[in-house]
Length: 165
Image (tube, rainbow, N blue to C red; front, side):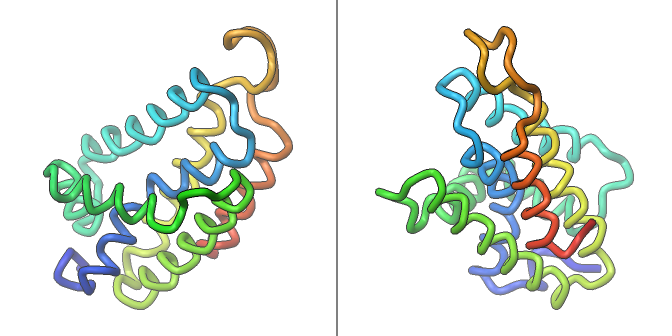
């Protein structure tokens, strides 16, 4: 069973940031204004909260969630997400995020082979939830498209980066 001690500090920061990265990839695929971005950010947070309430959560998931409950853990994850993103376009950010998710997937496969498939599937589920959380287009959240073609393509990219269907 993998936990924080199974990873180097840098690897652990990447694993901890991976739920936010999965959500950010979708947000950058189709930026939807302030209100939409808030809804999408909340969807990522809600996915973490729901995982914390799951009695079947793996030791790896529990370790990540326990660390995310501390201000130090949240800061480390946030710093990992924002590292190197300043001044980039949404498309460049999305590309960097997909690359980080690919790296996180490889680390999980190497360091937590028994738990990696479920954890990576959950990350893709986070991307799905973020895509479904806010309509794109429309006016003030009314009308528009629930999940756009760009978001669907990005969810597929997240799946490929993590090597999950």
